[in-house]
Length: 374
Image (cartoon, rainbow, N blue to C red; front, top):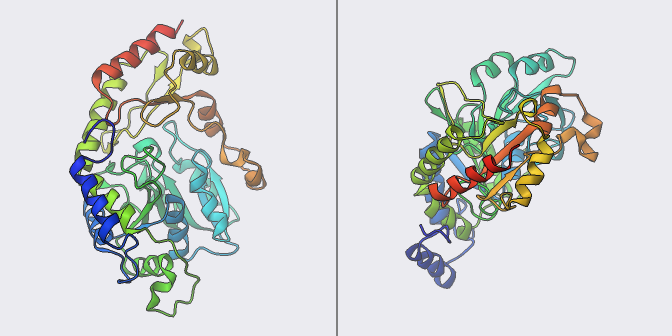
């Protein structure tokens, strides 16, 4: 791969060939999509250790489809972290259900202790959405132990390749959901897109139907729609997926280098040994107690030094500046989450290590950080 493109020249030739000579949709000759889409799904499923993978139109669509596949509907309740992207939560409302916000641990993942409290409340929880924040897996065994009969849906958008007890994210619950869109914000990107993984045959059939108008074969008893991915997007994703081991190795090694060389005012919470993070982003705490400035003042200085960047793979920022229950529409579902609020006010996220960032560029960034801290 070149430093300027996500694809090499010979790979771009394949894209041009598809544009010139083939069906860029892939859905009019097959109910399963085009050849590239099917190969992309097979490779993705194999990488995750899943029996099934279905490419869809976005990461948010993947969560909506997962919710409907397990039967979430009008009047149901779904537990979800308060500290996450709105794309993890909006699909709950779109499915006709209501979110119940759960606090997070020090690394930003759903807190099993607070989940237990939610599960013991008077609102029956139909599903739990866990978010593997910044590539660090959630405490899945503890979450499963308190989830009762609720279906567990993984938002693994940050965690393509992360592992928990030797198993990949995406197969740790009932259904896994991935975003592979957002420009270059994700490890691989199709511009816009998502993937749904599962090992359950019945859920797989539901996902397949919901994605494609009932798959045109079945008289489905639930509402289906068009959440398909095009052949053009699938080819772009497939070509990157073939390099996923290299891309993840790059992230892990360079991310670990940053973690080992952080200035003392930035603290990284190391996950336990049975977890393997892909270092999607490096999430740290700003330790105001040993600094003469606040987190926000620090980020202002970062910005003035030109270290913010404002673009994927060249950015330092505050993480989520709002919790979901602070967004106007979701205030109606507010459930105060103290740890989430603390994390909102103290987090510093570093995205300066993913392909094609080099060690030299990383050293320049780290020296810049150390130079602006009083």
